[in-house]
Image (cartoon, rainbow, N blue to C red; front, side, top):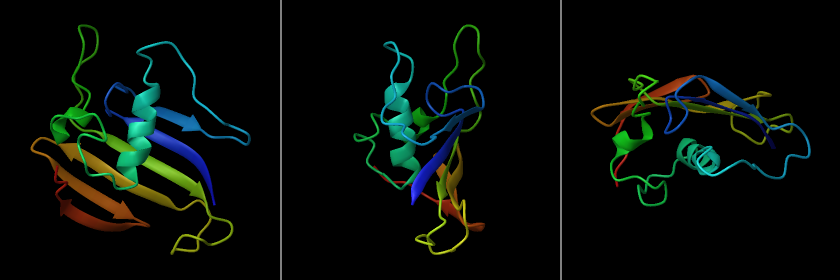
Length: 127
């Protein structure tokens, strides 16, 4: 099983739709201070189920939502999707390219989670 892509929208410092493709031989994420490197790691941890705010560097769950800047409006929701190459059928769906998606977090902190198209709506993340 291999990580193929990470899609972010309104998550922490990612105000706009951002897709990061993890092509073969990606071994690290580099960039200047403040460019969101740690937020990429936080997004992966969050989409895979991390619930401890301290581990995600949060004071409240609402902190995952892009707060806005002088140039960018605040995002109403945070959305993260992760896609795995599931050619070996390791994930339960057995489908290539299966996704694990908690699509929306909006104030108050309510999380609607989908796994292979099934919605686990109203899942509340606790800190």
